[in-house]
View: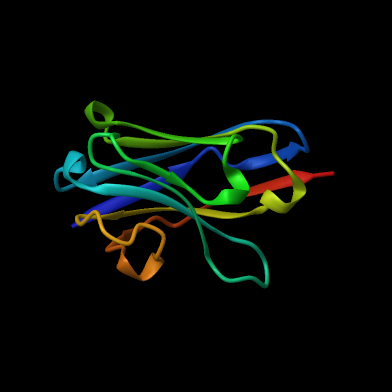
Length: 124
């Protein structure tokens, strides 16, 4: 069993930055693929970014490429999402997720563990 706890959300003006963190506890963190998803009000959950167990493979959805950066520190059991040049359309609840297999990184239903989410609001 893996428990995930996100933090770092908040209110920021357009163009600003936030850094989300997700701390994992339980089974071996370094063996899991980690990802960030988001869900805006009235919209479906959307894949944002994913990182393989050793950071060697990283994927982003097109809308955040060049602005967001995912990273992990296996010694701290933590995955990060650095968000720069934020836009109002980035407003959403952001969720951390974990799974053990490397396939189909952008599909939420393939992830085994989820955090409770952290809210990000970007004002115009």
